[in-house]
Image (cartoon, rainbow, N blue to C red; front, side, top):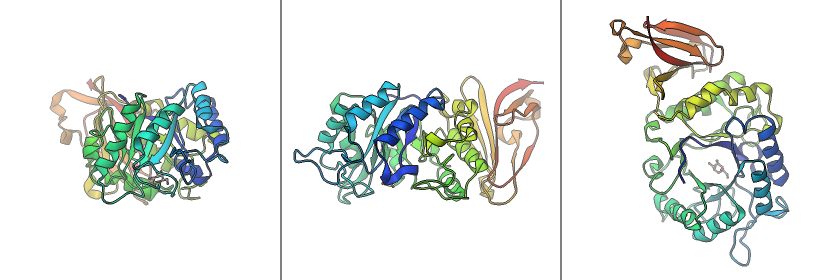
Length: 375
Ligand code: GLA
């Protein structure tokens, strides 16, 4: 399967965990359309862990929990498809999933066939509870081959949580995206920690196989499986989304989109950030000021002779992020400067060829779309 931009969609885990069921999936698919998220490119509706029976059927097939999914996966996939959306499911490269449901190890070809028959378009494939005797690359290659053998195009989402240098082999085993870190929680420390851990690894992310920094917690508002009441608000969500877009990460929403606030929908559909995320050149940002550990500045080349320039305060106190054009190679005597437009406020700078510095509240950011201009 060939994908040219980071996948966008929704995944059940962050909010619903083990309590996922058919009605939730149908209502979520409806909400994807009604909120305008579908129009903004969010197309995959993915059921995470906990959808199977604990044991395989007598015929050896993986089966859905009949209580949670009484009409079966095929009917549910048909419903999702009828809305113009795509249907995703989850399994694990192990006999058991992380929540100890049925995994696909040693049943890869049989399960891939079942998924294809149901009309699955996306497989998130987890790592636990894996047999230590088999290395990650082989375990994931088994399913990579099994998916291809079905003849159906299914996006292959590898969830090896950044271990075993997954970024170096995910592409070889057929992956379209690979989880590069452990699990996110709705805490700014988790968001910032994930971001910092990937500064040196974004270079591996490229079209058709993207660094997946985990599902978004934007708009969870303290509710759900990984929700932490009171720890994140709109400022944290804004910075979280901006970093994921600057990094070109897949954008899998993890909140309950049936009840999103207007502010969250606006954030998740911010056209500039989505354009940055899906930029055709897919370049990792140049990260500056890493030395202070708290207020990095990102410069990202974009297609069509543009760039994005973002200032972050990842600390819990007031801070300032800055930018020295000459350090990037744009000196005053180049004859060029930057024209900037902030993507949240519309604030503009007509010509910048000198030091820029922004005071930022804790966890806040500023993101500019930029182009080169002469005076
Ligand atoms: C792992 C993954 C999560 C989620 C759970 C399900 O922890 O990293 O994203 O899929 O398993 O059990």
